[in-house]
Image (cartoon, rainbow, N blue to C red):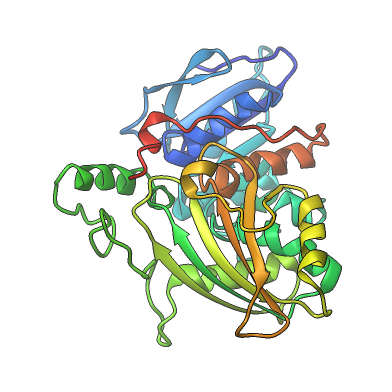
Length: 361
């Protein structure tokens, strides 16, 4: 079963539609009135047959088969093959690596949420507010890590205005960033069940600075991703970046404590003026800030507590919060598609997070 939202809209496929990001993506397509005419949803055989509400009606999830590229092509009423216009991949690296390049080569605009192509020099890594120009002429586009996106949104306007010497960030990343299995296990832990193995340690009532495998110098995989992706998005290969990634017992919403130093000598007021006008940012001046519970269900990046770094003259500190499933993943992907198609820029939307995601202790 497919959904026709518009008789003249685009053919859109979501691969990995029953995961947290996939479901959020389908919901955001509807919220932003994306011009979908024909929608196909795909997931593992275990989830095939589920019904997901989209554009006012139920859409049945189809099973991922041995050739998803052929499956999403489909045929028109005259029997001729019809190319899918846009495919959003949210199903992990193996599937993206196998099928995304071939679909992109056929002319489908492919926006991939996995890490499969983020470090590929030939694939743009895009945050629309920062570097959408890098995507022009490409049909395969990578969506960055959910912790890198808000950091790039914060730092890009600062870098454009004043340059950047270095960045140091500690991220406080919610359970939903690790997927539905992790989130379900978290809720079971809160109810008294033992850890289910989604994380290296118990997450309920706990925090730990381990997110991915450690390298020989003690840096975790997530920390390496943040540094490499930020340099690529900002187009500054020599930017000094250090990161500490911490998993926290929160259902949805990432937060980050950021330190940075600009090339030019600036005042706090200079920075505040730039951030107050920057696209995609909700800037809270003075001592204002927002927590993950406050940003859940929103598409902007909240920036607050901007102040001088007393340990490093000329540097500054800030606090960032962002819904990791929306702007940190699904909304960013939809915004890329909107920009690539030349659609009128949609305003930032806000909605309450689904009940299963909102139980932040």
